[in-house]
Each structure stands twice: as C-alpha cells, then as structure tokens.
Amino acid sequence: MEAGKYNRRIAIQTKTTTFPYDNGEPIDAWADDFYMFAGIVTSGGTEFYAAQKINAATTSVFKVRHTEQLTTLNRIRYGSLYFHILGINPVDAMRKDLFISCKEVV
Image (cartoon, rainbow, N blue to C red; front, side, top):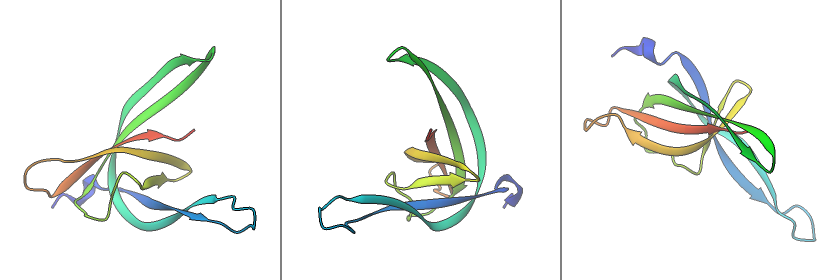
C-alpha cells in the first residue's frame, strides 16, 4: 500500500459566500471541509514581470488517494500555505491515486 508516500496532512477547503449586511455586499470565506494525507512534489517556481513588478509563482503537485469529493472549486491548506487547484488528474487507469496541480496563493 506504500502509506509512507502520503506523509503530509492537507486540508481541503470550500468557499462559502454570505450576505450579512443589508447593502447586499457578499463576503467570501474559506473553511476546512475535510482532511487528506498527501505526498508533495514542488514543481518549481517562476518569476515574471507584471506592471513593472516581479511576482513569484510557485506551483506544486500533491499526490493523494483517489476521491470523488475533490474539485477545482476547492483549495488546499498545507500548514500556513494556501494553494488554488489548477487541475486534478488520475495517476493511472486504475484510479487509485490522483495528482493535484496547484498554484500557491500569495
């Protein structure tokens, strides 16, 4: 089963929108939905110029057990880091594991 590959605990978060004020202004909040164990592979970082500033973008790939609960509308919290999910791909045709491609939220 190779459980040692999945040695990091990540939280899968879901966004909720509420309208607490009379003016109709929406407020978005992220809350932990469920937890998974994952293996983390950092693909690397890139720097690019935008509006005469240097921005850093870090992309990572998480490897997790297969689940139907996960979508690209979720995000991942790993410690104090947050990642937007760019894509979810099965590792092979057996659908035992998933690769989750992410971009770090700055």
